[in-house]
Amino acid sequence: MTITRNLLARALRRWAIVASLLILAAACALSTIPFARGEFAPAAPSRSGPVPINTRYIPPGTYTAIVLTSNATTRRWIVSLKTTRGTFPITIGGATNVIIPFEKGWTVLAADQARIESPYVPFEDVSRRDLFEGNENLAISAWGITEQGPVEFAAPVVKP
Image 1 (tube, helix red, strand yellow):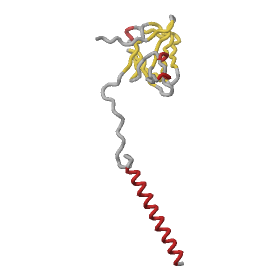
Image 2 (cartoon, rainbow, N blue to C red):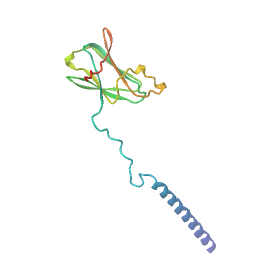
Image 3 (tube, rainbow, N blue to C red):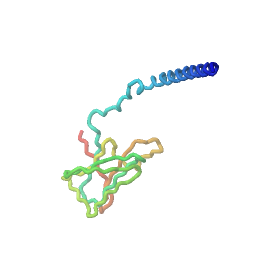
Image 4 (cartoon, one colour):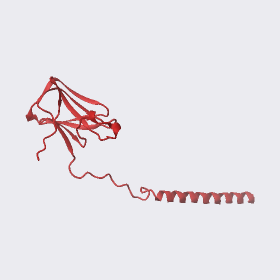
């Protein structure tokens, strides 16, 4: 019985030593992780100043539809259709065209100040972007359909 007890005591001591070494190794490894030390990763850099708003004005005319598209493949963007009568959010999904039809036509007057606004993402002709050539910047295209054909929405006039 004493031999068994001695063997068991040795085994427990060895196990305790191995367990202590494992715990020490884990503690050393965890001490290199900022979270384990109570330090947290810095917050994402805050954007100081106003959000850059990209705008395209809708020229006066009668529209049967508005078309919006993005060269994003998975991400979706929210833009706003704004007039003097209100603001209307529009979600543009990745790899999709958004077509807003106006069954009876939508007549836009200059006084309406109709425009599409996009925070952060600029307006460009996405058909001219070749993502395979390393041009990975995202862009949105927006245009209208009239009885006379497609109408390009205009960039705001910047006065020097």
